[in-house]
Image (cartoon, rainbow, N blue to C red; front, side):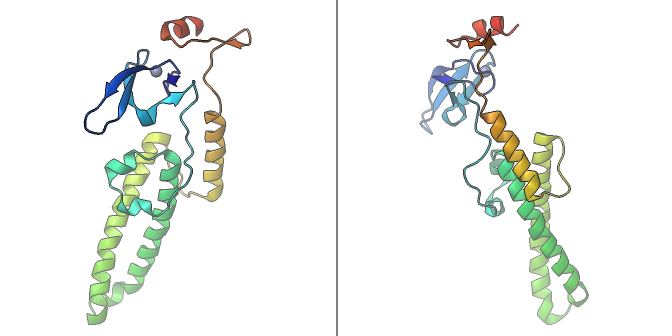
Amino acid sequence: MNTCKYCSSKLSFVGQDKVKKQNHFYCGLCDLTFSQKDICIDRARKPLVPESIDELAYINKNTKELLKEDTITLLHYLKTCRAEWYKMFELLNQLYDKRHETDVRETYRNLHSEYESTTKKRFILENILAERLATVPEKITNDYISEMILGAESHQDKKMYIYINGKHRKGGQHAKIKKSAV
Ligand SMILES: [Zn+2]
């Protein structure tokens, strides 16, 4: 059964779009339409922990693509991006006094332009994460990410059943859920 990732109601099939050939589904309670990749099965929650992460992939992703990434992937990206940013910052400082010398000028200019685009990428990642988490840690440690993953796994493992006297209701009409959720 296809269910809603927010409220767990049964979704109805809307149709397939002609361009991407993707199936779309509708939740009556949330009044939202979802594409195939955003639906859940049998009241499971949407997985929050990615199976694998390429920590440098952010370099070639624009804002639109980064907005579609899950939060844990974004945290990994920001951790790497900040480390790269700091390396460039240090190197620019070392070269600063020699920046007008013939054999340094070109290197300095290229590095400066890379530094600018990395700084903007850092801003983008920090601001998307701030929208999701309401805060962004000053330092993203492996321990911080591990704790986030543990929390995400424990959340996503809880199926969305509505319990009454220890039994969960079958069926998925939102009207029933509304009634039983009182
Ligand atoms: Zn819903």
